[in-house]
Amino acid sequence: METKTSSDLPPGFRFHPTDEELITFYLKNQAKSKPCPVSIIPEVDIYKFDPWQLPDKAEFGEKEWYFFSPRDRKYPNGVRPNRATVSGYWKATGTDKAIYSGSKYVGVKKALVFYKGKPPKGLKTDWIMHEYRLNDSRKQITKQNGSMRLDDWVLCRIYKKKNSGGRGDHVEKLQLQEIPCQYTDSGKLQVNENGFLNQQVYMNPMLYQFQ
Amino acid sequence: METKTSSDLPPGFRFHPTDEELITFYLKNQAKSKPCPVSIIPEVDIYKFDPWQLPDKAEFGEKEWYFFSPRDRKYPNGVRPNRATVSGYWKATGTDKAIYSGSKYVGVKKALVFYKGKPPKGLKTDWIMHEYRLNDSRKQITKQNGSMRLDDWVLCRIYKKKNSGGRGDHVEKLQLQEIPCQYTDSGKLQVNENGFLNQQVYMNPMLYQFQ
Image 1 (cartoon, each protein chain N blue to C red):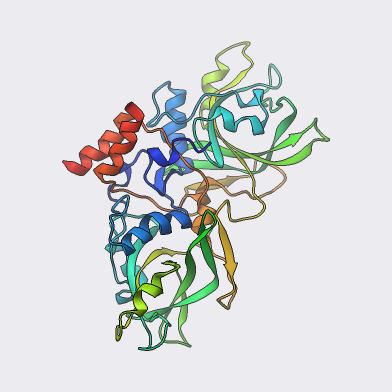
Image 2 (image 1 turned 60 degrees about the vertical axis):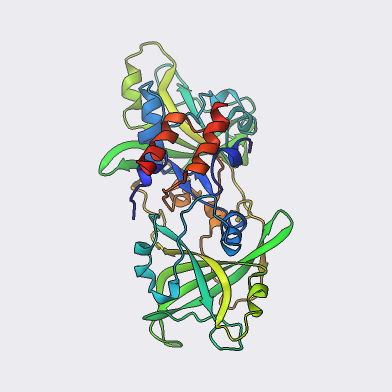
């Protein structure tokens, strides 16, 4: 999963997009069949796989993996998406977030947890999905009569929740300080690796830099 | 503070180094007077300024700012650093972290909080420092007799703590889901912006990519 990471980007540089960036620069382009700024997010129907199979389907990513996925309807006339996979299902959790670009409402972010087995007796796992969809994703689709397709594309971030905190940093506590107190540290900010930049994107900053 | 951010890097790409990367790729090079992979961390004696003055001293950064700083001794023969600034002082907090590169102990990360005024009656602020020093930083220095210098260089990340969570993302809760539950989201992972890559570093991935 770490292929190309160190050779493609200087140390410390990663793909750490904001919700707004994922929607306005990546999902919107994908929905309009326009090229993304960087071709790093593959098209994968994630519901055809179990979450632990998905990392191998991604071109990059160390602890988080991004995919453009279609969503099908659960029932022909309903708007509920089909969340079933090979050996389990994704279940929405928490509260959806409206994502804004400035003051403009551009999309929604939903958190889901993967359960093994069949509802309602599924077994909760640590696999998490953040699903981003455009605010107008369904308008485009309802025109297609008889289709089981619910959205054109949604953008999904898949990761396995770590209960241990310090997401993968090799750190060890030294009892040198009083006043125990926790702060966000780069270990927690430090989640995913990245690679695979295309020439167009790479050249712009260089021209900018050396003009 | 956001100058060059969008024009230098593709959307979603940022400088989000791990503790290990900051020490092994940036602080170690600085201590050995070798060029860093990317010239983005300026040399600033941060104790000559108050934290809110530092963002302007940085070449990049939106919500976090990085500096290489020297540290002076508080007392001629002591190893305690002088943490006083213009109108306050930095006070260590929490537990230091030993940073490893693989199994090798390479440095220490310390968290500090800025207090306005004079100890012990200083007023706690939201300004936080993560100070990285090399495991052998002091060995190099103790040879210099009579010097008030404690370390050659430490690497500091300065930021203002947000109590509001969602670090700057434009988000709004929609009550569409049951089972309230919190997960780390990209909003929280999303802290600092970056720019300013040098040609050498930029070219490598392109050559790699297009060979």
